[in-house]
Length: 88
Image (cartoon, rainbow, N blue to C red):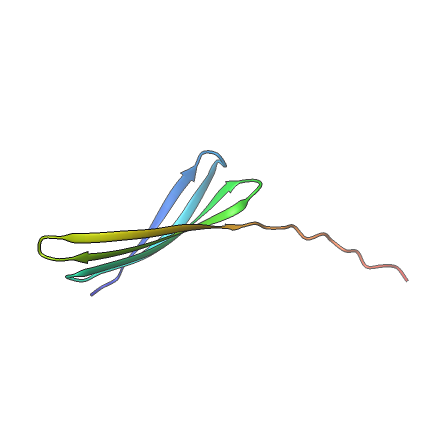
């Protein structure tokens, strides 16, 4: 069992940004597993968004069952205010 590693790129036309990601997958005779994470700038108000995808598959001779779980997390960045040292 050798893991498959991949990268992805996704263009968001709303934010005019390119999002990047990576994933890993494991495949055996009966089971397949996959996990990927993509980072994207959705728009100026929400900052970056991380998209997680998890895939699980079970295979038999005549039947294959797959499920996928996806979620997103917003990573808002709050700028720090500069504090100048007081005199005296």
